[in-house]
Image 1 (cartoon, rainbow, N blue to C red):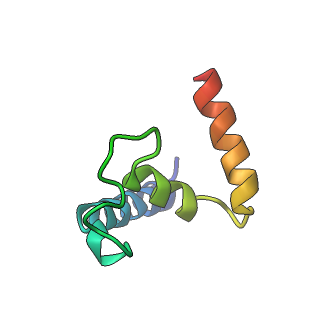
Image 2: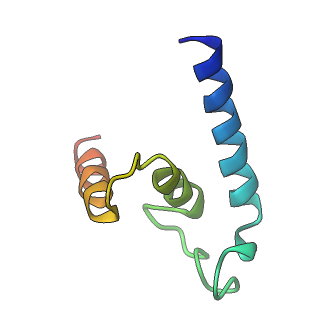
Amino acid sequence: MSDYINNLTLSLENVISDLADNPSLFLRNPSVDFTRNRKIDFRTLIGITMNSGGSTMAKVNIQLSYMMDTG
């Protein structure tokens, strides 16, 4: 990959990590939202949303379900 793509990927991963480290800033009920261990944690959900490429969430959910079933 080019340096630009590598830098962009690293920047995106850093932003996602920052968001995941402070989820209470983005949740309605921080004491209960994302407290249980689930298939999709906060970090994964934010990453999927940011990397959706303009797709609808329904399409992204279908793709994620397929990846989780086959992976």
